[in-house]
Amino acid sequence: MRLLLHILIPSAIILIGVGGYFSLKKLVHINVFGMELGEEKKAVSTRKPRANKRPMFRTKAIPLKTQDYTIKLRSQGEVRAHNATTLTAQVNGRISNISAKFEDGAFFTKGDILLEIDPADYNTELTSSQAQLARAKANFAQEKARAKQALLNWKDAGFQEEPSDLVLRKPQLHEAEATVTSATSSVQRAVRNLERTKVRAPYDGRVSKRRVGLGQQVGGSTPLGDIFSTDFAEVRLPLTTRDLQYYTPPQKPGEHGKKNNITFSSILTGNDKHWQGTILRAEGELDEKSRQLFVIARIDDPFALKSKNHPIYIGQPMRATIPAMMLKKVFIIPRAYMSGLNEVLLIRDGTFKRLSIDPIWSGDDTVVTRGGIQEGDHLSIDRFPYAPDGAPVEILADDKLENRTTNGVSKRIGKKRIRPAK
Image (tube, rainbow, N blue to C red):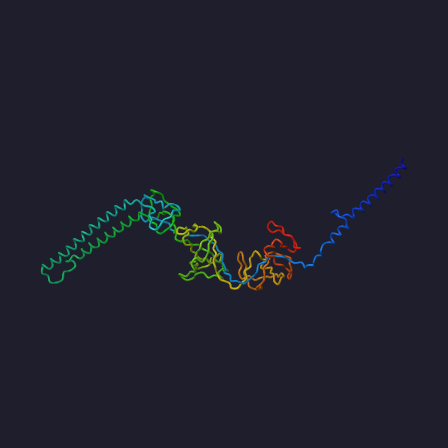
């Protein structure tokens, strides 16, 4: 039995090896798609030979042309009232009436009565002063009659020389006249005090805060409330020393730029709403800490009382765009298409050219330059960090935008997958 096993086991191993050899030999003649090598060669041979094309980049580009560019300075500040006043009473007394126009946020016009102080004492004072004036006028009339009679008596007595002032009672006459003048002044003062019991608005405006209530006793130093004018508002805007190289603010009295020459947008409401403003003047000194110069701009009708514009509020932060110097015949480069810091990727004569530019002006969205760029150059809007100078490039039309590649490597634009050009 042991001898039989020694014979059968080697024989089985040899048979298995021979069978595996023939199986592998058959599989070698079959490709992964189930096609024999001879059939694959036959299928490949039916294809047309590919042309030996030179590899190139593809990109979308924008043409560059010289044009005039107006520098726009950016600044921001808070809206403030042109006139802001703390109302105080001119007479003492108890508040007897408060107008609905003297509430927080209420509007009023010039001359409106905002509140009233009890006028009883001032009516009495006026009556008393009027009575004193009447007595003074009566006494003055009597003195004039006495002076006239004294002159007649002097002449009847037969005196030839001129009578003296004492004979003609001129001192008494002047005293009586002065008493009339004083009484008249007392009446005028009483009339003014009575009128001052009605606190009137000094201009068209709005109430910021009312500080007193009905029945409160007030005096000449008591603050009644805070108000501000509504005819126009002001914005204090800082300009840097760099900005002042391209813009000269008004310097002389009465000098200012073109009306509505700047545009405001609100930081709170976004950039969909705009207001026009005018720079009126510049402050006479630079800020000690920032070395900035502040200019004062005016916005007419800030609360949209006479127009359909959107109202603004005191203390509201605003962005300002100020047109400054115009640059002639420059190239404007969108900052989004810059290849690097002050570097652009140009397409000139069908090849790439990397160029470092020297900006004349740079803003948030654009870079303005002159040197290095030529008329007819195109600016690649794609970034090719490894594309060498002189590499051939094809400018794609809008309908070929999805075929853009970066050095033969597919990339995604939005949700579309862009495959390498073949």
